[in-house]
Image (cartoon, rainbow, N blue to C red; front, side):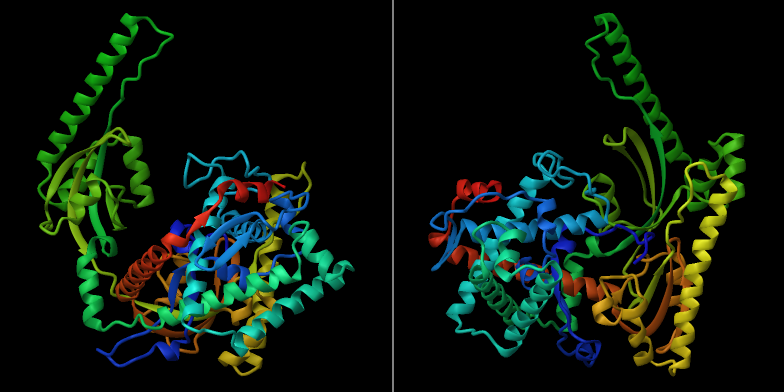
Length: 535
């Protein structure tokens, strides 16, 4: 949603696929059991719900040659996946993550995934990480599929309609490229993969998804259960306010190019640096009596130029607000249940090579309500200018691009008003105007939106205390103009997070249970898997 959206997702959060319910379905009376959307760690749904455009996989994998169907890659229960089928599954999974992490700048178009180190695991390349993910998710999917078969879950009319849609998309691509279905499958994925293989994997994915939904639908919790879960995990849900002042030091590292005497001097200097930083931190701590004295003491340590700059900017660099828990000494100190306002300490942050003075102010539970809304994103396009363009010409081009986007946003808003200023009127404009491909199919819907996600300007309007259903406006962000239609408040942020966390925990426990139940029948042939994607 615009380039200024914060990249504050975690790896696991992005892996989750959501089983959405309407906001009306989610509303229940206070104290009653609640059921809301639940993200689940399974990506085989991507195979069901996302169809790769012909030839796109070739940018990630170059599969040549015929794959032996007798080479089994994985077996779970009575279900086997051969090399041809696994290659397809790997392609889908790799492309999903490739596309996902490209959006966040972790993978570039020029990235060679076979040699580039993975951002999440420095011991693996991206290709190796994709492989591990595909194996893990296929294992989970086959366990779910076997459970579905055991529970006599059959292909429903809704599943059949999904299959029909997939084939309609394939036929459209075939017509566009003037190829047959068989050519589509063999060219887009690998030689030997055919429509029958696709049909089988589609059925496995759909039945696994049906089993997932059957399990997830049972995850309903009372207010008391959510409160209990929050209390058990509050340090990860709360936000912390405190003051911080760091005193840096140097760390000795032996230099083989220097003499023993030079290294000894460098080591002594580093030890002296650390001792001086510790002494300064201790003296600073002793001078602090309250929050204001902390601020003043830090200000007095600045140079005259630094003080002038801080005064002009009106900032307070010692104050940290809305901080989340971190699994380190600082995080543990802040999250200690015995912590009270006015507590202070010094910690040695070896990662940043600093002694850090901390002054605790408060911990807050996120009580504000999340919101549902619809939006139409109008991107401010990057202006095209000549390489030798002057700064004035570049600025003029940027302003023109901005004005063009604003004009289009104004056009959208005017049509919305002309058509009755209703939710239906807004929804009808989404497909024709929005640049947000993630919400174009849901009429621009964004559910359970949190603060500090889409920028300050966005938050100031959306979370205003006088906001009401049906309000609509145009919001300017750094990279787009957003036409926003406000729907409703949903639930307190802490409650949403607690429910999400509890459901994730319960789901993980279920997955571990069924994977254990199929452990004796689980077989994975790594050699066949690697050969299937190398060709």
